[in-house]
Image 1 (cartoon, rainbow, N blue to C red):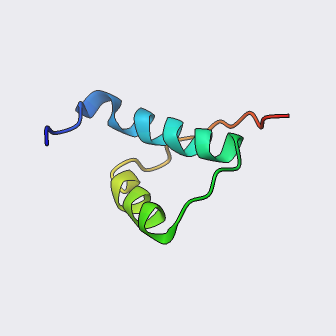
Image 2 (cartoon, rainbow, N blue to C red):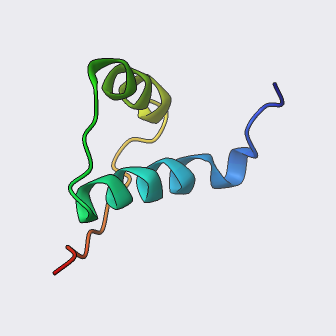
Length: 53
C-alpha cells in the first residue's frame, strides 16, 4: 500500500469523520481505533460538520 499524500492526510481524515457525523453513520470499535491512531499526528485539527436534515 502506498503511503498517504502527507499534506492532505489530516484533511482527508477530518473529512472522513465529518461525513460519518453528518450522516450519523455507525463507527465500530476497529474503525474508531484506526481513526484515533491515524489522527494522532494531527493535533488541533478542526472538524466542521453540517448535519444532514
